[in-house]
Image (cartoon, rainbow, N blue to C red):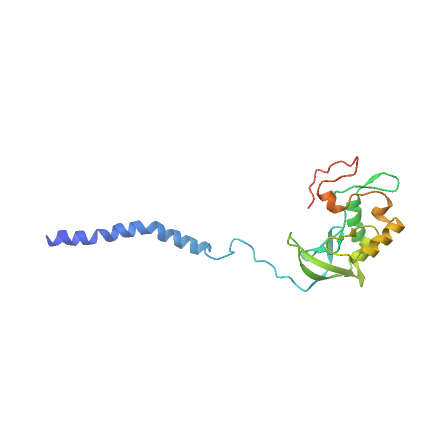
Length: 198
């Protein structure tokens, strides 16, 4: 009788251990891969610096890359990379690519400095940039490679009015404002590009 009662006492322990084993194994795996840590699945987010400086790569007419940081030039809007405009002779030109190329040539590998004002919805830094002491946004707008982005700033409206009067860059012909182009508006006869824009 004594042996039987000892067996009865010992039986629940192995059954309980076997029942808990899958749960304990799951907890151990979760701890090992760090599932319990908030934000572990994401890469750490960069804090917004006061400024970014260095050699810039031109992504498009209003976006730079400096050491892996994407910087959207505040207050201006350049034609999209695949956007086309009509020139003074009513011929289609790749004005988006022309804007980016003009900016790249103007920078000419000189160090760029950007005062950072925050981030946009795409996670890019918003910056007011200069090269050789000259305001990059003002240069873009004044030479007809971008327009003043009035929705966010009126700082470059005087430069835009000057470009319009001089009929330089995109003002020499016809174009769809970049914000409207991103929404799907096109010039009559402009072929759709296979590549998407931001």
